[in-house]
Image 1: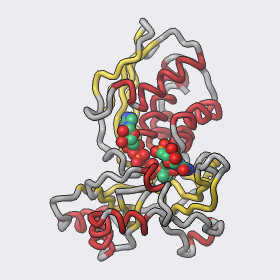
Image 2: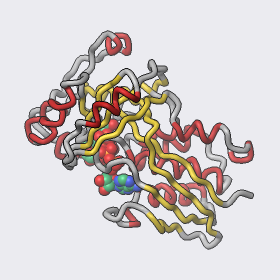
Image 3: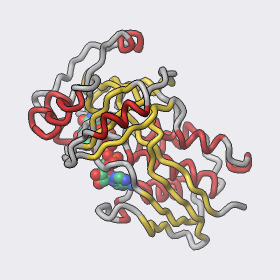
Image 4: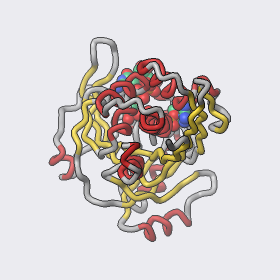
Length: 286
Ligand SMILES: C[C@@](CO)(OP(=O)(O)O)[C@H](O)COP(=O)(O)OP(=O)(O)OC[C@H]1O[C@@H](n2ccc(N)nc2=O)[C@H](O)[C@@H]1O
Ligand SMILES: Nc1ncnc2c1ncn2[C@@H]1O[C@H](COP(=O)(O)OP(=O)(O)O)[C@@H](O)[C@H]1O
């Protein structure tokens, strides 16, 4: 039996994000469109027979016990009663806390990977439900298909989006998600839109006006990228993105990126790179 597995944990973009209402518990109801990027963290899982969950390598500023990868592994162990453990190595590439969903994606890759290595045989619905307990963005990464999302992001309808390249910029500013959701200036009553109206040009990021006002550095980055293409915030920021016609065009734009910011070019993917890899693995692990 295979004891080690290396899986990608891709970034996502929210191509638009509207807030349409609020649940009784205060959580916001969203409409958003998720697409994956071929830009990913890398997760290496190695089975341990002693039942321990360890993270020998990962983000320095995330304590082992708080790492979403460790929490995902513990949760899977807890619900399945699996006696095995794992070493989880996390190679971070995705900027953290930037609205690219890296932590959620890492967690989803661990759930999918350990479900195979430990032979838990949970189906995708069960894994997505476990993922939701870790964060609203985890289910879309577990399922691995570009999706129209409603609810808090867990009601997913798979969609096929036209191929596109994106320039993504991280203005190196940390925007706390909870603080944004509590802003009195958020538009919380956007009328529901459809995929057709999105394709017709509708769809903004509800957080963007609030973030631009509170974080001038993000506003400056959006202005800079807007010179080349339509720039928008992803999730609650601080990363922003703009569609470009090719990888080359994106790389040309990045050549003039001010040094103080980080940027990359990536292709959108309807099928997550995680699922592309899972699909070609030996059937024993599918
Ligand atoms: C905004 C989005 C869009 O994809 O992603 P990111 O920018 O984080 O990638 C998500 O909705 C991020 O959802 P989630 O991952 O659950 O956010 P968390 O950081 O756990 O939530 C922090 C706090 O924000 C508030 N919150 C979160 C989600 C939501 N639908 N309504 C809320 O009101 C809650 O007060 C919560 O305690
Ligand atoms: N494996 C992980 N990778 C990144 N962040 C993590 C991880 N585990 C826990 N976190 C915590 O989750 C927060 C949000 O991370 P991330 O998912 O990258 O951003 P966002 O939710 O804005 O897309 C981080 O600031 C960090 O404290």
